[in-house]
Length: 140
Image (cartoon, rainbow, N blue to C red; front, side, top):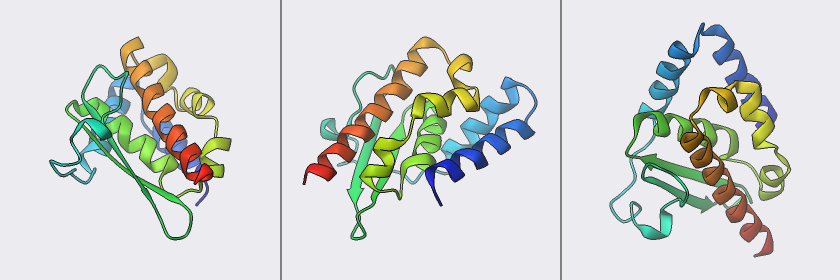
């Protein structure tokens, strides 16, 4: 599945929900499906800077050249945002990741206007970290 296909599926799911209260509940539900990180992964090397909540992101290069991501947070809504980010980026090549316009995607989902400034900054920090890891994978 392409990143654009994953975005289209998310957009369709969000459109089925009425208001942002329902969408927030859905985002929180998405976060409940995240695989837990180990204690070793909930450490400084994996921490995402620029997030108001505690956020950890693990990048795992795959044999086929794609990158897999796992993440966690101590905040329910942020766990849901991580789930959205992982759904978009995990399983794609560094080139695909770098070509994707996350800001436009979050606007399509309505997240840009629905999140607080702190949450928006945290989301941008997560995407920046994924992009840095993709750039590093390309350079390797």
